[in-house]
Image (cartoon, rainbow, N blue to C red; front, side, top):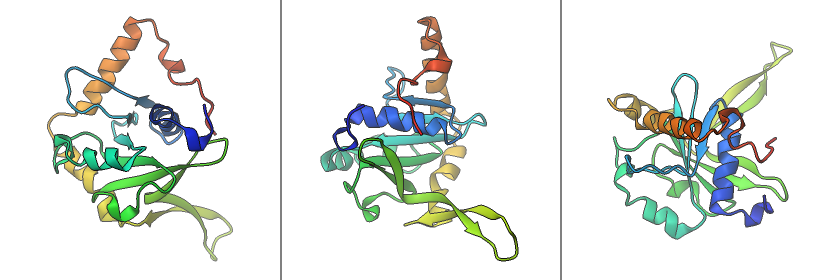
Length: 190
């Protein structure tokens, strides 16, 4: 993997897919293509309980602006219980991100790290009445209602296209003899 500042779109997508595995999305895939479904996410993570996170990697402002025109960006369309734009450091401002979407940036010098700019971040809080610290959500540049906006919208759909894509990818990989437990493990993520 190249230095963080020089990471390509595909390298960022691969990194995010690996990182999602450590965020309770063990079925995480990058650079997905399908002839059956129009939306082709850069990264799709699915948890064991079926909750999904769609990540769109944007390495230029023009790509981000063009993304708004896609038909699956309309309310009630597209996949992902949660949706996030992932960009290099400083490319977009939280105010530019559509309602209900998160913004993560890739930071670091030689090793990439995800920094949450807009969305839910778990932080450790010390309560004076207890000797233990607890993890509590902190919503950066949004509130709980916005963070959960797409989750409710997607759960009302009849068709779960992200699960269809995931099953199709897994079937193709198995047909080609790919060991799914080793999928996307070419980079080590902290």
